[in-house]
Image 1 (cartoon, rainbow, N blue to C red):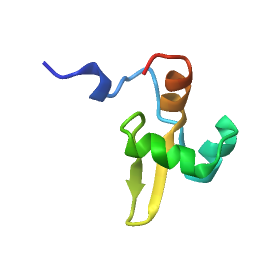
Image 2 (cartoon, helix red, strand yellow; image 1 turned 120 degrees about the vertical axis):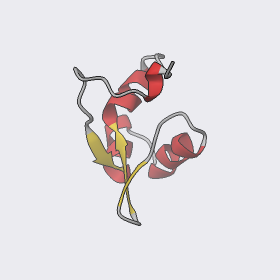
Image 3 (cartoon, rainbow, N blue to C red; image 1 turned 180 degrees about the horizontal axis):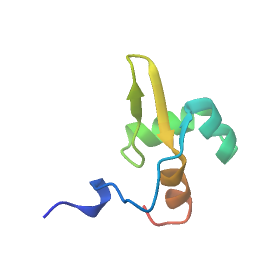
Length: 67
């Protein structure tokens, strides 16, 4: 049975943001967002070779203690 953490939810759309925008959203340094990705606490989504984005819904869940 698939883990629900990895299944997309039809009622919740992704809210993608670049690393700098995600850092501003949480009022942290961009390196903090990269560390969260490296630590596996949030996912990084690549669009091409260099462009990395994160889902703001994942950041909200992490800050709410749901992740």
